[in-house]
Length: 396
Image (cartoon, rainbow, N blue to C red; front, side, top):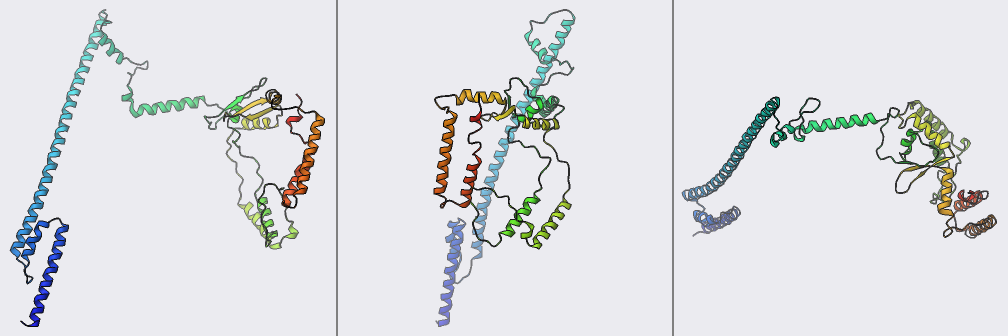
């Protein structure tokens, strides 16, 4: 045997082994393991294929899959037949119930006719409870329409009820207050000799966080121009912004002489262009004119005060004199908590506290910021005329 022939047989054997392994992998994945040996037998050593045997294997596989599919179809048909039978039984029971209900109604109508005929002839059927029950269920309203059950009303009944409630609420609304009202308003009038009008009751019931739009607002352009001038004046300077609240707010604005001409000209042009775009128009108020007038009166009335109650109970209106009297009676005159000092002793204590604060500022002035020292000094000098609280200056 020549070397070429031996090499060709080796290649054919190697190719047959590769195809056998490949077929086994494919058939293992498709879960047809029992056919592996049969297909391997079909493949010859020389690479030829027995087509007749291969066709038999394919037909066998197809028949198996067709049989499994037929079994699943038969199972589905059986399940559908059971569902159809259940529906038929339910329909038949419903029809029987409907016939029974129709028969019952027919009997009730017959009894009703008999009762009416006996009433016309002078007989009394009060002893028949069933007839009375049926007549009660078919009583008529004064409007001439028979009563309807909740089930028969459906969505229409709910919509009619909603419309009726809206009509009632609109009828209870005050004519002078066309604005929407809040349902959780709380106001307590604790005055003795005065009575608060209804308009101010609804306004004060909105609480201290309620705000009405102002009729005149300071233009924000002035604040913008001041900030621009300060930014230009301090441009290029290094320094940290004060991070403390113990400082006096500055109101100084750099004058125009200290500003570059370009900044002044551009601010003027910006101001003019902005005002040309601005159009004044009437705003929409959230309170009526009478409520607005009453708020101004309450603001300037020194005899009445409005205080916020605890437990989120809203506002309370009280005379100032009575409020001060209650404060003394229930708080300051409690000797177990408070002690009343003579005026001379109170003044001496005020001087002592002032000197201690001044000494503390002088001692730690080097460790404090400059704005903090300025703030403490100004606040201490501001309280010289009135060192005591307003409450302690009252005499009751």
